[in-house]
Amino acid sequence: MMNINNELFNLIYRDKRESNRDRFSKLISEFSDYFDSVPLHLFSTPGRVELSGNHTDHNHGCVIAASINLDSIAAAGLNNDNVVTIYSEGYDKPFIVDLDNLDPVESEEGNTRAIIRGVAFGLRKYGYNIGGFNACLSSEVLVGSGLSSSASIEVLIGTIFNKLYNDSSVSFEQIAIIGQYAENNFFGKPCGLMDQIACAAGGIVAIDFERPDNPSIKKMKFSLAELGYKLIIVNTGGNHADLTEDYAAIPNEMKKIAGELGKLHLRECDESEFLSRLSELRETAGDRAVLRAIHFFEEDKRVSRQIEALIKNDFKEFLTLVNQSGNSSFKYLQNIYSTKNLQSQGVSIALALSEIFINQIGDGACRINGGGFAGTIEAFIPDQFVEDYKSFLSAAFDSESVKVLSIRNTGSVCLTD
Image 1 (tube, rainbow, N blue to C red):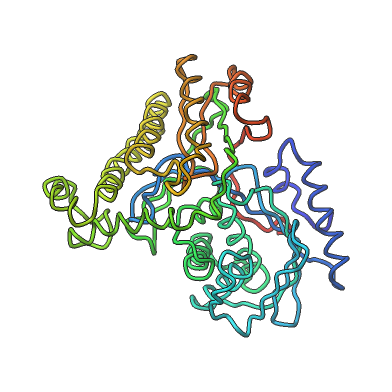
Image 2 (image 1 turned 45 degrees about the horizontal axis):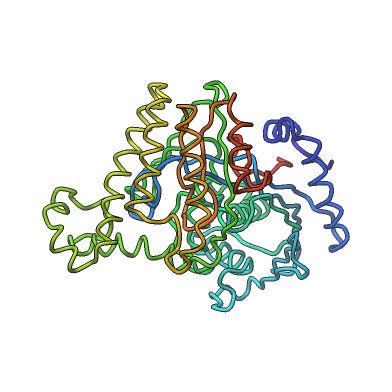
């Protein structure tokens, strides 16, 4: 299959090599149907899960995240038109962006064209080269699932530009920053930087966003398989796509508290001053903003404790803190369901069933994954109880909703390098 790096391919896809060779072969075939030229390169970018640090990144806090074995892939080749044309699986028409016009287009918000335009603008803004290419794209990272489908596509497109026009000289950190820029300013979603870094870097990463233009990124070395646990995602059937307003309210309310304390972000604020001024802050910012700030301060400290637990190989402590994080997200951060649709609480149901099961077996942990309000939860379940867990959740969710994931140690790559 082309001039593929088999060692890299086998490292990424392990026991699913044949099915993924079929995925790429299908893309190559589609490319030849749509375009005259042959694709020169194949690309893969993972999705991600957030292991700790729920809604802390946008206020310069700390997180732990990991790339997963679900990815977005592309077959791409140069063209001489200064136009990007991408055929994406599931869409009848291609996404076409003329690189001579990279101003944001309001009607494109939430659309793949906005991502293409934003990534191209960001690369040019930071002094990198851009140019036209043709591509066919497919993704296993479901839209609205909380596994960072948009970040995966942003990083994938950035990686294509990087390979085709910059000789792969752009660092993964810079590609992540450009992806976030595209999502904030073109796609219309006010996300932090965690998603893009996790998709670009690969593996398990501890990230400190005290300086978001130059975040501290530390690779964490631990294996769930060696510890005897599986990471399981439960897709509750909700969708993030219609929840931008709910999502945006969290950083906005946290920053409102920071502003009342004379700062731009909560990371810069003194927690003792915050606690001493609660009566005043309740009046000026509102109770929900206060509760979300409480979550930030406690969650940021919790991430540090979880990093320490992993370094010490104390996984029981790590799981205890995962449960505490989930509890804080529900009570204080309040991103488990949308107040605009109180009868739709799939995330709450999944968490309730998971807690019942974990309490019955006396081991494991669960929490919301990512932005919240809909999408997925994550659970750490001992190997011997995985099938029982899946069966237990079948009371509310079908078997396709419960997926056992593995951590992917390779970030966004060109597979023909």
